[in-house]
Image 1 (cartoon, rainbow, N blue to C red):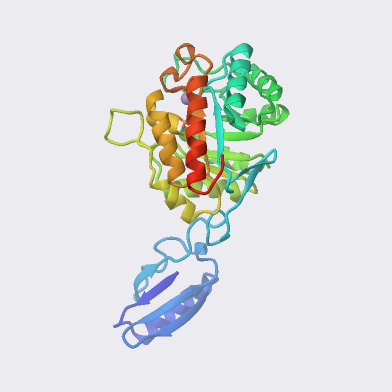
Image 2 (image 1 turned 135 degrees about the vertical axis):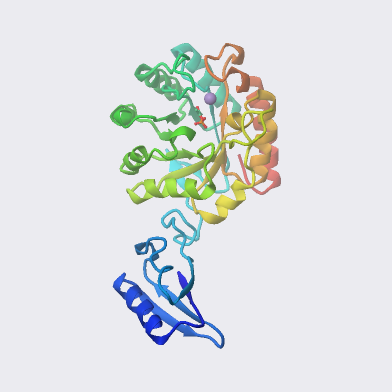
Length: 338
Ligand code: PEP
Ligand code: MN
């Protein structure tokens, strides 16, 4: 943090500023320029709440230089972090695709879904046993036993599982069922109690962007998880709200390189919830990879027209296979692999 001192500030007012900085536990470094005096603050600037120094008579402007997010920032760690899920690396040269149904439905549906996910060459599987639905009258997910259907189907094809956690009371169940990646959905990105609890685990977390969250709020949400001890975080852009109503959300492609600059952690993209239509998914998936995403989270279903949830955005096994072929070529063209 840098404090710019008012040119007309008296000696007494300047002394008061330096005294206050020391009282707050920081070290002032005074730089007397030809025209202006600037005071650099050494130490953890987060000890200072907003407005604490601005009110002093000597102060013209306070400029933060340390990001409010620390553990997740590139300032803290310059090199890319690789987050491994059962040996599968996120954040390295290899792009990871997670595919599977929006919702766990039946053991048979999950077996067929897992077969298609593996056949297409995706390395992890997704599926929600607990669904955050806008209406309380729609299907809410099959619940606890859904994790068994998922675990059994995924184990048969050796696929790690990614599933959404909405309630801290389900954490023991998630650990018991050996959930490989906990997904925090868009509606819970700022559920700070949930973030603190997953922060106490050592299970990798996919943190989806809140549908109306700024990149900074998203980074701060990740900081909650990291601050409580879990540094195994993967960001997932899934589209944000805008004035446009022709498609479900707007995929914020700009957020991909921006986030990669701000954080050392991997960034993946969910083109399914961004577009909300099957036909939009391939274009958005390719745009994401071209923009530097480390992976994709895609909804696929053995029989999309029969899906209990998000039927109009799921890829069929054939569509998933075709997309993976296209993504493989794209990955090679940008010096990565799939
Ligand atoms: C999901 O991935 O199943 C989901 C509900 O996504 P989001 O939280 O992005 O809406
Ligand atoms: Mn869905």
